[in-house]
Every structure is written in C-alpha cells, then in structure tokens.
Length: 235
Image (cartoon, rainbow, N blue to C red; front, side, top):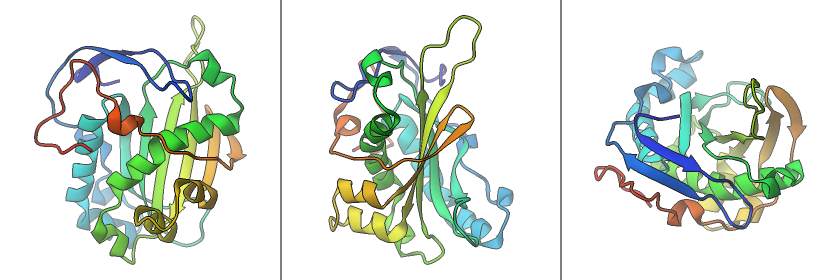
C-alpha cells in the first residue's frame, strides 16, 4: 500500500492504546486519481449528476485523506455516490471505502466482533464523516446519506496464505449525520442510528450494532518523519 508515498511499519491496534507507526522517509506526491469514481461510471442519471457536480469536492476529499491520514488507503473508485443495496429506489450516499494499514494486536483480535467494529467506528467514522460532509452536500436533496467502509487486517497470515480483511460498512442517513455534525446528537447516538454490516473476508456476517466513544487519534497522531503536503489543510 502506497510504497511510493510512505514507507512505514504499523505495530498494531489496541482499543485503548491505539496505533503505533514508524516511518522512514516520505515522498511528496499527488493522491492517486483512480480513487474517485468518474461520472461516466454511474448507472443512473441521479448518480451521474451528483458525480459531475461534486467531482472537484471528491478530488479534494481524496487528497485530504491521502495527505492527512497516511496510514489509511482509499480503495480504487472508493469515493463516489453509491447506492446502498439495502435501500429501495435510487438512494445515493456519498461513500468512502478505505483500508487501515495495521498489524493486528492480539488484545484487539481477541475482542468480540461487536467490540472490534465499535473500536474502528469510534476511531474513523466521525472523522471521515466530517471530511465528507460539506455544507453544499448537506443541503443537496439528491444526496440521502453517507457511507463509511473501513477494512483492516484480521490476523497475520501464515506462510502461503492470503491476508484476510475484516470490514465494517456504516450507513448514515443524512438527517442523522447532520444532527451529529451540528452537535444535536452525540457519537453514541450516531452509532445507535447507523446501519452497520460486517464481513470476514468475502463472507458477510450480517448487521452489527456498535457502541461508540470519543477517539481523537486521527486528530492528534503524527507520523514520525512525515509532513503533509502544505497545499492540504489537515485538522
């Protein structure tokens, strides 16, 4: 992941202790352009219109994640106005699909699935949501919500085995997201009102009801030896 941008070793994730990263150098580079779904890839007029209207904002979002969260990788075409499969009609949610570059700490992997999802929800969903939800998007009637999809390494693969990722997909209706961003509800209510699906590799595990708490890791952690592009404003 991103060898051309940053070489680093991720030492693990624990719910209380957080990630510990080490970096040996960082190269200035632009965010990969293939992370944003292009307008001609949408399958409906509604999606295409949103994609065209906010293409610049999506590119800015891609750059912000790339430069400000160097241990997080947006998947190709991971940013776009996708339709959640569990909803009827052509409901369009702004989606960000990321993989967290980490090695699983034993104390984390031993936790129940709900607790692992809760930890990743608390760490990443509120901060990515704030980056995604501009005022114009919140006012746009064509947008009905936000999706944050976070994947992480389940366990260290044994010799010859492919790595398996766990994934939590969090779907947030726009009214709930707006209430959270404007301080009308807290993070616990954000988690309670969200629809969350979990996967173990390619196996769908079904819905999960996470708990959530304040986690300022994304806002406070600095990768040693790495300076974000000065053109990008990080929190």
